[in-house]
Image 1 (cartoon, rainbow, N blue to C red):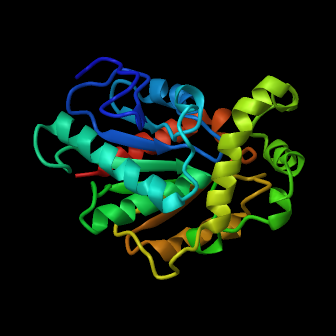
Image 2: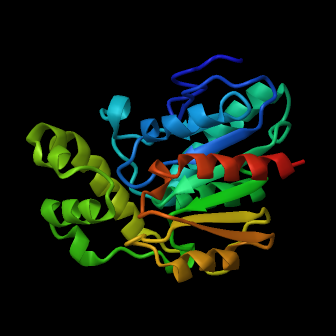
Length: 262
C-alpha cells in the first residue's frame, strides 16, 4: 500500500501522507483532547520515507459518536491491536518485519509507553524506539484535582498550555464538541497509577520545549528511569506545543533514530 489511507486497518489509525513500500513505521499518540489531524504536518514532513500512523482516540472528530476511553492502559490495549494489524499487513508476515517506533506527545507519551510495554509482554509489536514528547516521566504523572473542578478550570489549564485558542473554547458549539474528549483524557490521566519498576527495553528519546509550563526539564529527564536501553534528551525552543514551530527539528530527530534501527 503506497497511497494515503484516511482510515487504515481500523478506526484507531489514520494515515495522512503516502509512504514507500517497506518504509519504517512511526506510530503517533496524541495529547489530551487532541486528535490525529494535529499530526498531519508531521506525517507530510516525513513522507514518503516514513509511514506515519496517527492514533485517533474515540470521542473526537469523526469518532465523536463513540464514548471516549477514560483509561490509559485501555487506550494502549486497543492501539496495540490496531498497530499489530497494520504492521502485519505491510510486512506480509509477523509484526516486527518493518522497523517501528512510537511517538507520544504529552498524555500520548504515556499511552505510547504502555503500548510498548504490552509489546514486550507479547501483546503487540515491540517498537525499536520510543519518543516521549512534552511529557513527564510515568512515575511523575499527576493531575491537580483543582483542574477537574469545572469546565472552566479545565479550559483554563488547556489555555495555559497553548493547546487551543480561547476563541475555540468560547464558542458554545465548539465547546460541546471538545469538552467530552478533554474530560475523558484528563480523568484518565488523573486515574493513571504508574508502575515505578516498569521499563521498556528500547531506547527512549525525550523531546521537550525549554519553556514548557507543564513539564520541567528535570521531570522529562526522569524518563531515563523507565528504559533499560539508551536515553537521550533534546531540548528545543518553545512551550508545551513546541513541535508546532519546531516541526523540522522533530522530523530530523525521527529520521535520525529510524535510520539507526535494524
